[in-house]
Length: 420
Ligand SMILES: [Zn+2]
Image 1: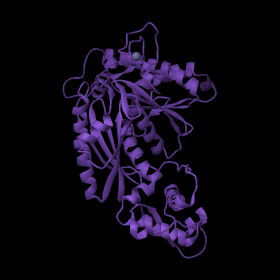
Image 2: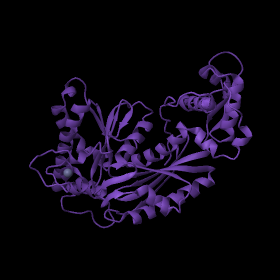
Image 3: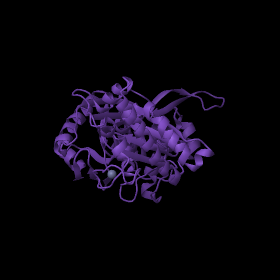
Image 4: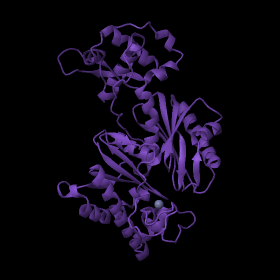
């Protein structure tokens, strides 16, 4: 699978402007304008947009070209009369970002290049619930090595990796991932160790958060505020408000699976009662009838629903209703008008949406003024692994000088800081 995903919205530099970092800031300014353009731009256009002199633009372009961050392409008109100019655009070689994901039924690896194009997507189907962290992370390390080798052949260098885990993460530590049986696991350190301490920056983040970021990138920033609901063995939510991911004070935001829907309801492994997870997770929908060997939970549910199984259809109805009840509270509090059904819910959306919508329309006050959108995630069940890869490459997009500092060719182009 390949797809074009637009770069994220450029951020403003946050460091104070001093003489010694002016040169880096100018380089980042030029790079971000090429990134934001979405089409090839000429050196002359860049000089006009940034206010930098033409010689400064020429020097910066040389440095970006040598570092394989940009490439020259065709000719571009700037909308005015005159001869066309050589365009500068993002490179499809050079740095790449790796994403890794632990799903209910598979491990996944994805690589994207600077343009946001998916260049590699691989899965190892299996059930990892209950397996120890070293076992799971060693298998992921093998997939990461395979992805990096494949990309080297394409002229890409993976320098950053982001691991998606189904649980809250704070300061790099997976606090709790009950589906995996993990508690206080330093997954980044274990993965780094399993990869023989390769020169690779590794970050760990919550699966629903990374999936929400993946949807934000994939929407070309047309989505501004939404809730991404990740359905699987558990249920998590990634909340994006005004274009920013809400992580919470300690990384525990979006624990939608443990929102109470019936105070005296079924006991939940968390110690409470009547949590959404006990009605709408995949094990709850399977209703004590596990998926047969060789089948995934969502495939088993889909098959039974399509065959008209009354038990499965009733379980899906309950899942949709309870999902709507839990989401209504969240939407009332946050004033969000879009819900994306992700993870396994993206595959079950046609059975869940009607009941969820009925509850939301009845319970969310703003729904009487403007309807709430409920739809499957754009990236389907791949949102988290693609979001993880895009989060990795975004580190290079935001700080291209970090990548250039790694390049042996930089010394040839380095020049003393100049106000230019
Ligand atoms: Zn609970």
